[in-house]
Length: 102
Image (tube, rainbow, N blue to C red; front, side, top):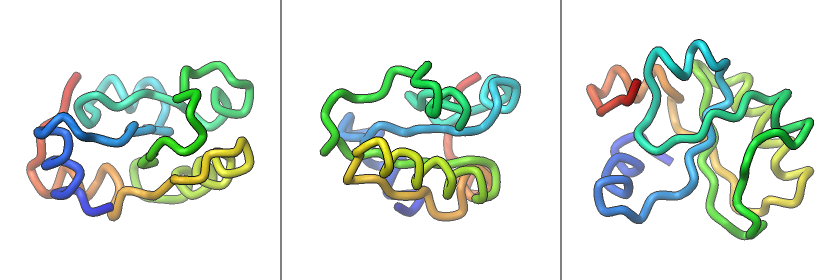
């Protein structure tokens, strides 16, 4: 999903669940509004609250891409079928000047 499309959907309150797999420190420094912080290890140990509906739309991101790809594979392994990556990840979101929460 493109950053601008996600921003529009957030503004319309029709956003998918945004799963930010960066560390807690990175997340606290600034994240996409409404995102949940779910580092890969927390997903693996099921220490993060994810949607019960395995068909729910999820968008996964990290800073640059590698962790998000691992997160996507892990979410697919856990049964989530509608998982995509944020194009360009958090770095593209920031370059686009889109809003962040702290």
